Amino acid sequence: MRSPLERQQARAAVQFLAPALTLIGLFFFLPVVAGLLLSLTDFDLYAIGALDTARFVGLGNYRDLMHSPLFWTALRNTLYFVVVGGPLSVAVSLAAAVLLNSPRLRLRAFFRTVYFAPVVTTLVAVAIVWRYLYHPRYGLLNHILGWVGIAPIDWLGDPHWAMPAIILLAIWKNFGYNMLIFLAGLQTIPEELYEAASIDGAGPWRRFFHITFPSLGPVFLFVAVTTMIGYFQLFAEPYVMTQGGPLRSTTSLILLMYEEGFRWWRMGAASSIAFVLFLLTLAGTLIQLRLRKARA
Amino acid sequence: MRRRLGPVLLYGLLFLAAAATLLPLAWMTAASFMAPGEANTFPPHFLPRHPTVQNYLALFTRIDLARHFLNSVGITVVATLISLVLNSLAGYAFAKLRFPGREGIFRTLTLALVIPAQVGMLPLFLLLRELGVVNTYVGVLVPYLASVFAIFLVRQYVLSIPDELLDAARVDGAGEFLIFRRIVFPVIKPILATLATFTFLSVWNDFLWPLIILSDSSKYTLPVALAGLVGEHVQDTELMMAGSVITILPALFVFLAFQRAYVRGILSGSVKG
Image (cartoon, rainbow over all chains, first blue to last red; front, side, top):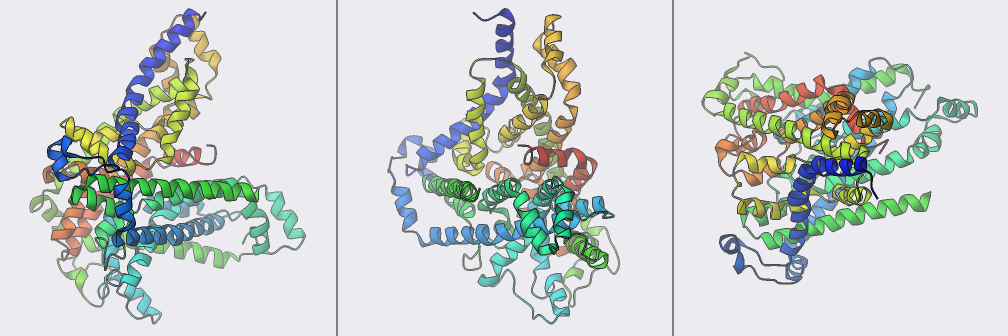
């Protein structure tokens, strides 16, 4: 038998939870499940007018994706961004955190705030700013590179440079976030460890690889997984800066999903792209968890 | 790395990185005060020769940016307020109210954290279309109103409130809503500030969802309007920079005002969690 107090609490819990859980269930979980079903249909522009014209096509959309060169291009571009841009971002974050963790550093709060500022800026707006910074003739970046004798680069017009340009913007925009997380992790490492290592004659690099890096283990895993998940969702940068070009060199999976779904209204095909992305994200997360476990 | 890194090298690196980080934002601001065409001259220069506010004036006269600004403010403020109430109630219930199925429901919710929002975006669009709220402010708001991450954050914070405090109030016959308002609410204010800052910034900066759900340009939020403008006015560098300043400034301002609360949110979502 439950006491009146417990029943009263259960009743209150329903009232407290109902609004949030209804919204999350109806507008998050339901669409996710519906998305899986949608990806098994040929839902298109006609189906939007009359829902009953959509037909079940099994794995047809996924089969079509496998035969679509554009899908493979988008997949390759997205993996390029994740595999190159992700680790570079994390490395810059870690370097910044290590510098900021220097003992007796003055102006620590100032530097931290400055490095973090790009994180809170509006992605669309800074992508526009960078689009001008990357201008081959009038852009500030080529001008600065000119000081050290580097010839102008057509950052966003050259298929080989467009993705590196987007990665550079992403690093600038994001490194402050993981930097804060690393910094908090670094502050939990006991100072004595470093002192003992110094007495034993370990140089800065050895101290980093033997003390700092292993101590950050769980923090590092968290940062790696969340960064990867975030980087798989590349969209606004190519949408604003390159429209996926030149020669489709910056078309990401989400950009392709957006074009299929909301430009051509092929919702079934677009949903299958979204699910491929989901599976990739999941696989990447599981691999990193496994790697971590194997090392531990 | 530590200790041995000479102070000159250390501060040199730190200031260089700070300059590189601020450069794009500084140039954006400088260019927004340049005369039309001035940013497209060779060689590029940094400071406006004759600073002018005409780009800002043009944004509010020739282009109705004020409208998009108000759209963004309205959507962001309403989303922040509603989500604050709903998520804190739910987070508290998961932390302190005893009811059957609590752990199961909570575990199911954690699934949401690994599913990218884009996976459900197409069906969500179709669902909202059936409900007749596509291309409305209500439609934009829908996915912002409740968040699993926010519920987690509140739950974690509320767990630190001693049960005795709540039980004492219950014995005195206080209802759960009264307990929440009188006892819990004052204690969890810090995490509510965190949550408000998080929600404000993520809604203000969001792009893909408003781009999808809003088709009528008069309803566009600032990022969507800006992305549309850059298509038409790509040559008007100075005008676009003024638009970018107006879009970024409120976000930076909110961050600077609530920096402490915001940083606490990032850290409790990672190191502790």
